[in-house]
Length: 345
Image (cartoon, rainbow, N blue to C red; front, side, top):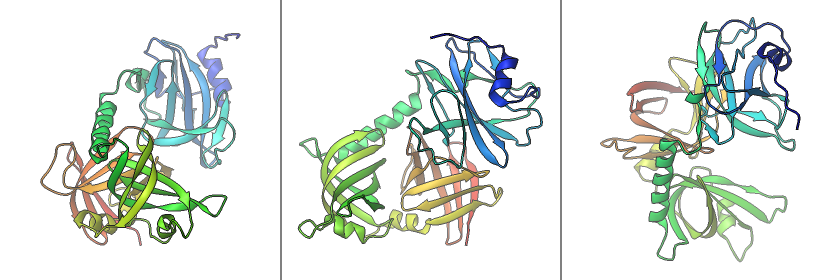
């Protein structure tokens, strides 16, 4: 394999098709490893991701071109033996050189949506060190703690034989596969998304029953846990039992729909069943699963909303200060930041 060492100015010209960049925000590799950089910029009325650009140790680049009108851009880096801490904003990427608009389907071979970090553009003399986002794979105490919490919850739901699984969940809907007789259904409970596949047939009415349910229905499910992958579990479903909605179920039902921030109309989210989709400045974050409960990360004495990322090991905790039909006030913990939302009609 032939290695090419490019000068930063020439590299930027090839990467962005522009010869001049503004003196502003720089991304600098202060690690000991070569990293590959991808950047998402707003151009031509849409967000466009492009990469990968080699960024050697000690190297710096200024991603936003001269005249860039947006306040923010997004970036992702990958290095051998390092893991990247993103902001749950996902854009389509591909191996090697790529340039992909955010409205693309992202279905070609090798393409996948990956998490990017948000950065301020046009800030003079601002430097973003890679070490703040890219850390050796052995790091990540917060992620390890969440995995431990999830493991404890899963263990509590397993019966003595180690595979029998019984848990209270919120129904997330079913999808019929190419063969109409096959169906895949999803549930949320115990900090996990749980999937189960089966046949729609008279002799086994479980999946026929599920097809007639509305998303968000409270259930108790029972079966054999076949496999777990991080925050996802695959279940061989044996039985489904409707639950009488408790107070937390009713609060979750009251949260269903579209909400927008009272202070920033570009900050909004929608809740469907036990899933939340956050949008900020027109960019949709990766979906989160949510649960309403009586405690959260050691805090108690009230009602709390726990939101965890469906694609990486991270979670957010909010105290529910008030909830009415058209208003919701959350307190982001542990910082105590007040967040006021109103329902979109």
